[in-house]
Amino acid sequence: MCGMPQQPPIRSTPARPRRPDASMSLLTNVMDHSLDDGYAEAAARKKAAGDGGMPKTLRAKLGLAAGLVLAALVVTVGAAQARVAAPVVAKEREELVDRIDRETEAADELEDAVDELRADVSARQREALKHSGGAESDLVGILSGAVAVHGPGVKLVVNDAKEAGTGGDGDPRGTSGFSDTGRVRDRDMQRVVNGLWESGAEAISINGQRLTALSAIRAAGDAILVDNKPLVPPYTVLAVGDGQRLSTRFQNSADGIYLNVLQESYGIRTGISAEDDLRLPAAPSVTVRTAQPSTEKSGKGTS
Image (cartoon, rainbow, N blue to C red; front, side, top):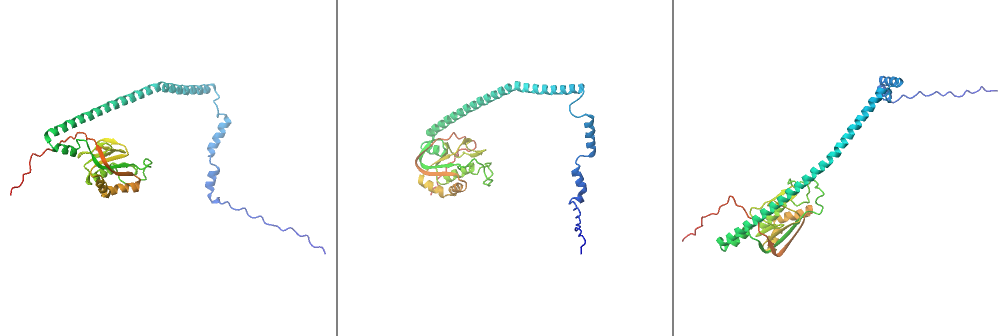
């Protein structure tokens, strides 16, 4: 018995999957046809007419050549003018530098003259004190800073941190204008000097600048000024007094502790030592405009 031939199984073709972006036909059309049809047609007509590329007529070619020549002429003239002006600018710069040097030299000479006149005035004041002040003139000269002094005392060196100059980290150590917290500031030196006075110092100088009752420690930018004279680190403070006692009292004072905190927190370098003999120069002449000597004498009471 013969069987009927078997037909191969018919497999249905699966339906074509729907595009994920079928619902976004407008966006799809924009992406597929980014160039508007009108622009495309205009470009095709221009290409067919042969309007693109280099100019075809003689007039157009001459116009293009004239434009190129004009552009080259402008560039050439500009370069020539710059080349001619360069020596003039260099000469003006040299003259300006020379003028600055001359004025700086003149200012230095005037400053030296002022220092000489101050020294002369101080010498005359000291001489007048010797003739009129008697035995008290030396003491007055020492207390006013008008005479050079020497004696035992303390040498205190304050210097910036080793990494000073790399920029601060925004630590709000103050608002004096310094951006680097590792720099010694004017108010730091103010506290050091006040602490030494309070601890018993009889005369103080910073980097050779003698301090008086009218001395000022201020800042100008990153520089510390003592009586308007800029100083550079390290700052060497010399204080005449009872050396060991002065050193101990200062280190135990609030200002000494403040200096120690600066060393531990910001890396500011300090060093203090008692010295057997320190020599401090005289201060420039002190100009007094307001204070007047009192003529009244305190009378002694009678029994």
